[in-house]
Image 1 (tube, rainbow, N blue to C red):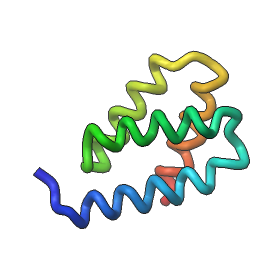
Image 2 (cartoon, one colour):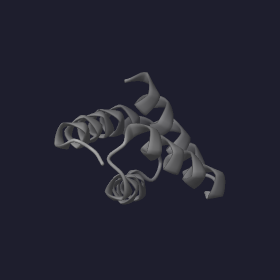
Image 3 (spheres, rainbow, N blue to C red):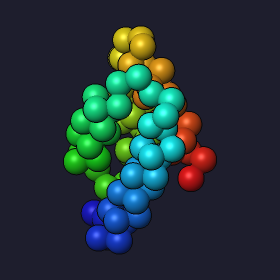
Image 4 (cartoon, one colour):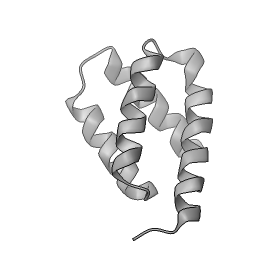
Length: 77
């Protein structure tokens, strides 16, 4: 299982990545909804990233680009 602190760290990283991605994404509300849904499934950063990459593979443009932008910002942090 995960530590409570891990969830906090992941949540802060997600918040920062969303803040950084906001000016560049077209569907910000949909992005928040999608990211929060993935976050609820896991508190592990590696698993979160894996779920996000799977979501990107299934997504249609232009939302696919929004997800990629978020992932890029997330990985930098």
